[in-house]
Length: 134
Length: 119
Image (cartoon, rainbow over all chains, first blue to last red; front, side):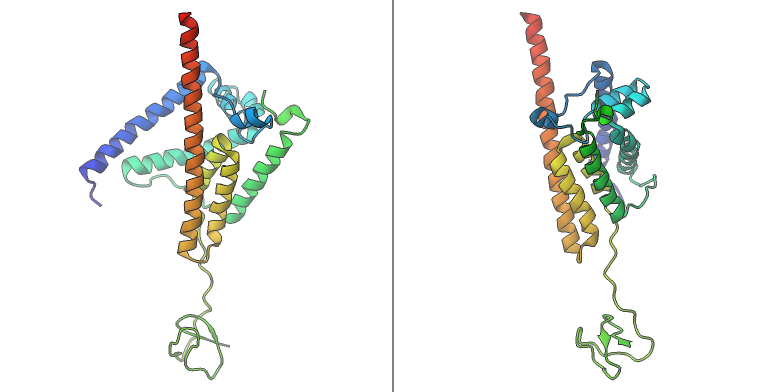
C-alpha cells in the first residue's frame, strides 16, 4: 500500500513526538520523585489497584526494584507487558509493518486478570500494610 | 444423522431440502454442523483497558476490561464491534478525564510555586 504525503508527515510527527513525550514524563518522575497522586484515594481514602504506580516507577528509575515491588507489585509486573505492547504499536505505526510478535490472549486469561486485580484491590485495603504503598 | 451441506443444520435421513436455509441437500459427505465463530481477544483494547484500570479511572477500566473479554463471546461481528466500541469509549473517557485532572493539578502546582516565589 502506498503512503500519501499526509500519512508520512503524520508518521514522522508521531515517531518523533511520542519518544519526546515519554522522555519528558520519565524526566518529570525522575526529577520530581512523585506523580500527581491518586484521586480515587484522595476522594475515598481507599487504595486503588493503581495506587503507588508513580512511586514504583520512580523507584525503578532509581534502580530500586524491591522498593518498586513494595509500592505496587501488580503495576511493576504489568509494566514490561504494557511497555512492550506500546513499543510494538509504535514500531507498527512508524515502520508501516508489525515487526514484533505478541502472545494470543484468551478469554480465561482476561477474566483471571480481572479477578487478580479485584483480589489485589481488596488485599491492599486490609489491615496488613505489606501491599500498601509507602 | 444427516446435515445440510450449506448451513450445517441437522436433517432427517430422507429430507432433500433444508428447512433452515432452503437449499437442496447434496448427497455425499455431510457437512459438519456449523460451530459459532471463535473470536480472538482484542489485545490492544485489553491493554488499553488495563492502563485505564491502573492509571486513570478504576470503575470504567474494570467495565472496559469486562466488555473486551465478553466481545470474544459475541454471536455476530456487529455485537463484537459494539462491545469493543463501548470498551473504547469508556477507556477514552477515563484517560481524557485523568489527563485533564493531572494537567490541571500540575499547572496549579506550578502556578502556586511561582506565586509563592513572587511574594
